[in-house]
Length: 305
Image (cartoon, rainbow, N blue to C red):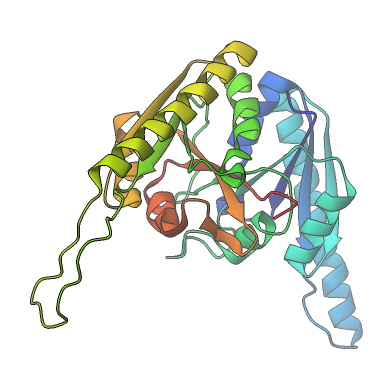
């Protein structure tokens, strides 16, 4: 179970759409919750008016956090604290996480700037690639009104590639699955092994690709064995319902996107590289996967990466 959750807010309805997700976790784990906001000064002038406006803005932000904290405390019946930090935003958030025992960050992918074409906003991306704490990302809806209340993650998908890096997300996904009693689908996309064939003249109008069927079959069998062994361990240790799927495909992204619909997935769990949250373990499938993913996904950046 979780002991400490952190929800960054900026006063917008987009950022607040992470709150029902945090509330759903709190109702099941009784963790402590911290609501955090980063103050951005209104101006850098030396006049008395500028200083007064900035103090008033700071007070307003503190009152906002207090109101949301009271609402969350009444809703989930848990202890809620607040923190008002100083900009720059990403550095302030990351420094706070590094200095406190935070088990899980729950945040919206976009805040006050709303929905953009990029699958992660700059703040969400900065947090996800600079802290070694799992981040539950919520994709907000670009519409007014209260966010939908999330009751449960029924099914989560974990795409793996057999590496230790990709497997580093498993423990965090299991922790969340145990809170909600979620089913887990372990997924592996296997691309055909290209054989070393005879050379073809550069003038050949059609490039020829030879597939090593034997090597491809062996790779597929190894992938299935890897997932079956991992699934067996998770069932035995945690009593979870775990299934596997291995697909032989030319391109991983469409296969994983198809699996989301086929298995009625509520959440996707991924490990990230240090180069950024947009560089996930599945490589080139990142953008296609997250754009097509359910409303929430779990990211983890291992400390040693």
